[in-house]
Image (cartoon, rainbow over all chains, first blue to last red; front, side, top):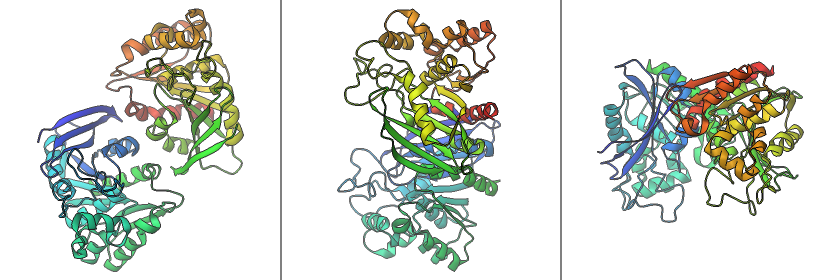
Length: 280
Length: 280
C-alpha cells in the first residue's frame, strides 16, 4: 500500500492535501483528499467523511464544497474519497453512462461479473481507507461523522446504518434514500448485485431503517428545485421511514435550491457545525 | 448586444447567474457571471468587480472563490468577467502559450496587429460591461469596488488608478504590480502594445503611482509560497512605489500560501468585508 502525497496547499489556516495509494480492496490506485486544520502538537481531531455523488472524484467537493473555513473553525478533519475504482482493466458501464461503472460505485461490494473484482467501495470506505487515514493523519477514530451528496448521501446513510456506534453523526445533501425504488438504484444494485432484490436491502437506507437499523440522529437538506427529486431521490420515502421507525431526523426542504454544489456549499457550514456539536 | 442568461442557480440566499452577450468592443460573444444576493424590492446594491488571472474564465472564481456567503451577508453584487476575447477568428499566442492571447488579455486595448481588433479588454471592463451590468442588474453604480487575482490584480489596480473616484475600494490577491519590469508583462505589453515602453506606463500600477495616480486606499494579500512571487509578481515594487508616493496601502505577506484558489478563497471574505466598509 504505497502511500503518496500528490499535492498540498495551505488554505484557511490548514493543509488541503491530495493523496493516492494502492488499494487492496479495489485492486487499483485510489486518490482521496484530506483537509487538516492547524492544531496543537499531538492533538487528535475528529474527522468527517464526505462521500461524493455520481460522476465525481475527490476533486469536486475539494474545489467547490466550501468546507475549509468551517472545518478550520470547528477543528474538523475532512476526508473526501473517490466514488469508484478507476484505471486500466476496471470495467465501465457498457454504454459509458454516467450512472453506472466509473464514477458510480454506489458504495457497494459487487458480487456480479465483471464488477466483483474491483467494485468494492463498501469495504474500501468502511475498512481499508479508515485504517490508512488513521495511520497517516492526526485523527481521533472515536469521533467520526459521515456525510455525502446524492449517491454519496446514500453511501453515508447506509454505511452509518450498518455500523451502529461507529459514526456519531450522519448527514446528507439530496441523498438517494431508497435505491430499491428508483431507476438509478435499479440499474446500480441490479448491475453490481444481481436481480435478487433481497440482496439490495443492506444498500437501501429506507429498507435498513424498516429492518430496525437506527442512527443517533440525522440531518438532511434537499433542494426543492432539484431535477432528480421526483424520480430518483424521493425524500418523502425517508421521511416516512423515519416516522414509522421513530427515527429522530431533521429533513429540510430548501426552496429554490437544485442538485449542484451551489446548493451543497450553501448548507455545508451548517452541516459541519451540526456534526461538530455531536463530536465534541 | 443580445443579452442571454446561460444559467442561474440559487446559492447562499441569492442567485448565481452566468450570462453572455455580443461585445461591440471585442467583436466576440463574451460570458460573465453575476451573484445577486436577495434584497428588498427596488433596492440597488453596491457591486464588486473581480478580474481573474491567466488562463481563467468567469468560471474559476465562480466555482472556487468562496465569495457568495460574504456577499450575501454584506449585500454585495459580485461580477466576474472573462479574461480575454474568445472564439473563431480571435488570434492566440503563436505557440499557444498560457501567458498571451486567449485567457491572457491583460486588461489592455491592443494597438498591434493582429490583436488590435479583438483584444480590447480595457474598454470592455471600463465601459461596455459596466453599462450592460447597470442595465440588467440592481446595482448602485455610485458604489463600486474592484478586485482581482494575479493578471486580474494588475487589471484591478491599473483600471482603478486610471479612473479616480469611480471605484471606492480596490484590492488584489497576488497581483502583477509592475508588468514593465517582469517577463509576463514584457511579453504581454510588448505583444499587444508594441515595443515603445512609454506606451506601457498606463498599464503598470507602479508606473501609474509614480506618475501621480492615487487610490483612496489599497489592500493586497500575497502568499509567500507563491511560485510566481520572485520572478513575476515582485510585490516589494508596489510597497516601494506606495512608500515613495505616500499611497495608503495594506500589503500583507501570508506565510505558506501559494498562487491558487486555496489561497484566494482563504482571504476572500476578509477582502469583501474591507470593500463593504468602504461602500456603505
